[in-house]
Image 1 (cartoon, rainbow, N blue to C red):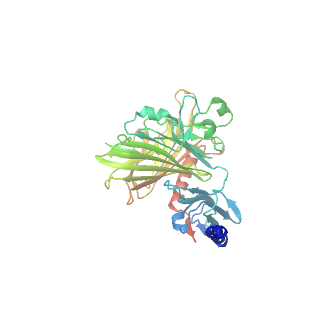
Image 2 (image 1 turned 90 degrees about the vertical axis):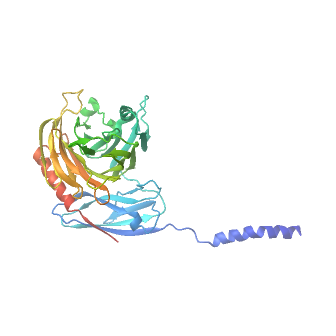
Image 3 (image 1 turned 45 degrees about the vertical axis):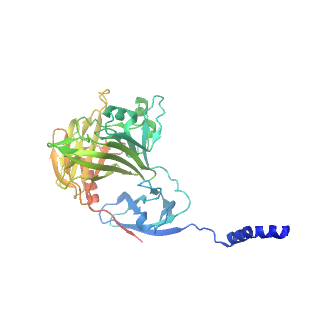
Amino acid sequence: MKERDRQMKLTPLALLLAGMSCAPALQARDIVREVRLTNPSDMPREACPVVVDLKAHAAGLDVRSATVTCDGQEIASQIDDLDGDFRADELAFVAYVPAKGSATFSITLSDEGAPREYTPGTRAYIKLHDQKGKHPEVRSITYPGDADLLDMYNSIYGHGAVFESQLAAFRIYMDNRQSIDIYGKTHPRLEMDSTGFYTTPEQLAQGYGCDILWAGQSVGAGSFRGYQGGKPCYIDTVAWRRQTVVASGPVRAIVEVTDGGWTYYGKTLHMRQRYTLYAGHRDVEVDISISGATPGTTFCTGIQKLESQNSGFMQGDGLCGSWGCNVPEKSAPDHEEWVGLGLCAAPANHVSMQEDDFNYLTLLRTDNENRIRYRVAICARREKDGFKTDQAWFDYLRQWKAEADTPCRISIR
């Protein structure tokens, strides 16, 4: 009886093991998509950003890895979780498309593995300022609305989030100004981990770039502002402020600035500013979402006039540009930098252009989705193979605007 009882007790376990041996192994799922870009313009598109909405084109797949090829050659791509829910939202890559031509890409999406590694094309970070000079890196930081502005500003190394491509670098101040400051490069490369906007004389002699702009009372390079009494105004009264690094990788860097409970014209607004910089680009895409604003509420952005030898223009279609010289660090009055700035607002958001003593201003309104979109471009004359005159820079800006008006057509199947 004892032996029979022992066999009977073992039987369920034996059946379970037998069932496991017969069950099919879990298989990784792969989905293949073809992306075709068509360039309608007479100019080739260098580093054209391509974004694939994975919720729309991955058939419910929880994408963990991806491969993008063109003519059998793998190119760098990047998977991003934009809302922090631990699921990939978008796949991004940049592509060359010939003038009046097209390019086809094969994308393989998988729910297995890890994102592939490529040479970094962008970098974004927030680093804390600490007495030991370690500057630990964080992904996000939030301050209450009544925090001391100077304390916020000084608590972050570099005074705010920093992001760069090979061609340019930017930082957004963590205070009520939320100003965009810029860094010009001599050679195309990533170098913020070496200089962090604080280039030493030795590094300058070695060919590193540096901070190239003194914003003063201006809007700097595309800083977002309110607009009251006929003047730009800061984002002053808020319940809380936050900066977040959303993405940093081979294809793009994304930084968000969020203001909760902004009191503006007697209304309580909630605002998210998203800044996206692609590899191979000197221009930043700005996408701002504002809830709570009444139709017709006016905001503004713009570019500053340079301190000396400024030249600039404004067009009725939302494009403006400036070029000139300035002293970016007042403690080094002999260090001058020549700078070019440009801004182009989306037609749905553009209200009008205004000029004051410091700026070429673009007045803005939200669209039907409560969003505002514009782009900011910069250059430094110190660039080895860059722009050397205002005319060359302004010609580039008009071409840049024309490309924005005639984007590549994307089809996915």
